[in-house]
Length: 445
Figure 1 (tube, one colour):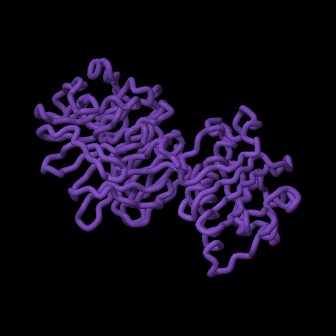
Figure 2: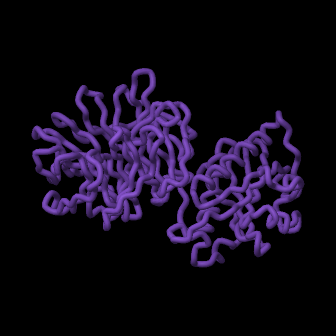
Figure 3: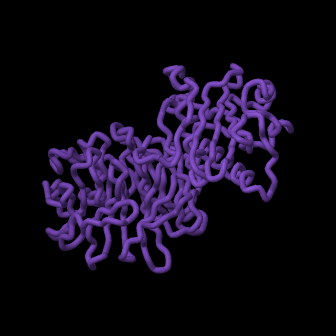
């Protein structure tokens, strides 16, 4: 284990059953929270802080980790992170525990929550100490210590953000998850993985330079993707470090859009071995279980419902590419169209909450944008507009955020948005990204 929680002071067990922030409520409002700069401590003692100097690596780390915390909480859409410029002048001189600061000062800056964190190092070992306060009630509601190495400090900061998010919403945070995508660079298209905030870019080290459409296994242990390693668009499975690759389907024609079922037993994939693009089910060894669609028009881009009983997919059987839903057991016989606006809808991704499907649509100006459709009512909400091309959305595993590619900043980057589009942020810098896939909650450090 890279890091661990040392203590939780019994506060988590005492949390009330109802969420403090009701994300799904009609009257939802982001909770104002203050996050002062992380304090550098000696030996982990709450009161023994030092003033970090510009050339002090511990102080530099504290500055970086403070930004990580603020960015995570802001990006969640559940918090209004108060501008530090509005904090009182003595805020950075305060301690971390009750009695070492005046709670009324934080009421005056408009904070409902107050998150204080200390950082200490001994050699290569690091400790982050977190204290969360309900400002109005004047009491501490959550505390923990996180121990690890200097290299794991960023992950520990994400863990703090996850714990704060869960305290207020009673839902699991996604700040320690990963996102896979294709990145084009120097004439290659490689499968890469980044942290949920865009940091930690690394490739799988694949041999071929044309790799497409990565998707995660439900346990987070590997990726399924299409590669031209042998000259044909074949479907492969690889470990996250690229050390082991297995070809799942090398049939003539397309072997694309492979997605593993929630129980890990089946793979839905688009194959064109019979002369037309259709959706098939394979077992984990790549053998055909059954064919799900049989239509003269193209059927592609399958996406599993969270219960594994249905698939969303794209079909042009109605005259233009639209999003359909079908039962896995009956296939085409149960296909139901759920998008009726626009004439070019594609790349559906089913939310883990089961109620919505995100997709890409081309509008009347030939610009691509991200939309969300309600599976039951067919009601469509637009997530992006008038901000370049926005494509290929993928839901976070808690169903509260979306990642997609966008060229609004001049090059194709990964952007993260709240489910209603109210908060959107670019998370990558290098450019060349496409077809992101947000990984599961498992396999977290």
